[in-house]
Image 1 (tube, rainbow, N blue to C red):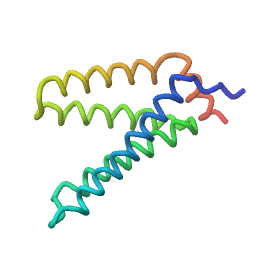
Image 2 (image 1 turned 90 degrees about the horizontal axis):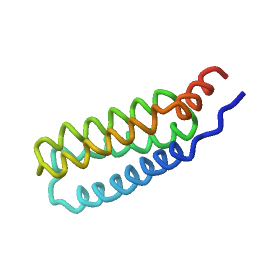
Image 3 (image 1 turned 60 degrees about the vertical axis):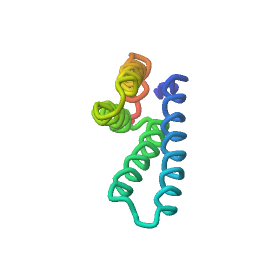
Length: 117
């Protein structure tokens, strides 16, 4: 039996898709407009692409995608240590919220049922 995708998982997946696509386009334009390619441009674009992958595969009930989504957000918490403290707090709160949503029982059933089929 296929578990219906929880609305919360759908919203998180769409959020990852939107953030990844917007970031990919925004940072890509910045990189192209620069006279020289910033050293971190490729790494930034890869992290934006990872967000798109998370969102797309969470919609397809791939369990590894929710773990990647959590790791992606944890990465942002870590790099926020070097930014203003408010950014760190915001990223940490988002990490906790996303973890709570993606690992609640309804989400667990959704991802677990996809593995069984």
